[in-house]
Image (cartoon, rainbow, N blue to C red; front, side):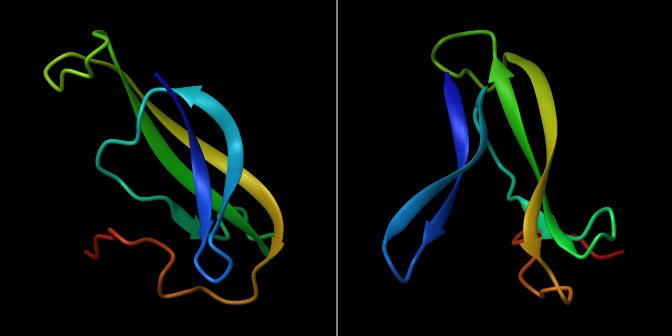
Length: 89
């Protein structure tokens, strides 16, 4: 199974593909959006999981991928909504 990260434009109702199409699915995580390399441009970190069986049996994972995507979108401050699921120490 192959999936692609999408940006959902709620104002216009558009789904905009982001990054490459990769094998696996995004099972239980949300992307992080921020300035990872401090270049004043948005970076996106997201994950996907492959499964060894076609039916995506959760007991048979076959690899976790963590992906980083650099964008050309200017970012001037840290946004409170940079990650939906975010753990604080």
